Length: 319
Image (cartoon, rainbow, N blue to C red; front, side):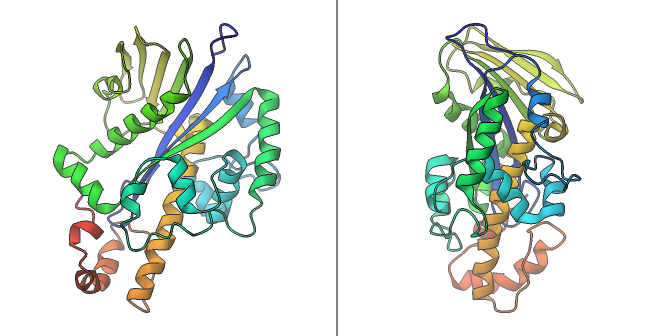
């Protein structure tokens, strides 16, 4: 998985989501990308500069792991330190999403709870120092040009996509297509793109979805099954390769990084969501939005939501 000549480049892309299961709050998918300029195994090279959620000894290394494990161990701040280490995201949430969101900001600005002026990072985070150090370390082993994109769906838009396709998985497909299409601007003819994506539920066949990413050429399926589905392009301007498999965030650290980025954005937006409703309904306890607690929260806010002109579909995800 190395470059073949001085003109072509090799790109590693990881993609994952956060908030697919909840009934409340936005769905977030994140894609991360880096130019891989070295020879050999990028996975081991990447892992050697990071730490897992179970390793709290060397905190100078960024935490990259399954986002649920990372969040349970170190909370939002742990996710945030990793995000700040890899990406330059602007001063506030509005600027961050204006630069990095491929879909969602145009809808978020109409959500009464969204605060675009909120600082991107906590006051205790020094993003410039973290990013500078991490960039040098990763450049030394062959990784350059880390970048990211977000695909965000508030509840109403989530419901519209699901209802239009009569399939909840359509939001995952839409996110994957949108992110890859926007990253395409970084690629030149002859570049090799290796995409790693966490599996979309029980789905095994992704040929039709991935075909939407190419401007020309065909997607050819290799293995398609429970354990992995992989694909390559034929006749495209670039050499596209995709591996979609369960637990990709554990097996491939670029997917782990995307998982943490998506989880971080979801948690930051849910913090704004809960703060807004705490102002509207004093005394209400915050929610993570998942089915076990979402009905309790919605029952407490629905009267106020109706008074504010917010229909059920704007707040509650139907699937």
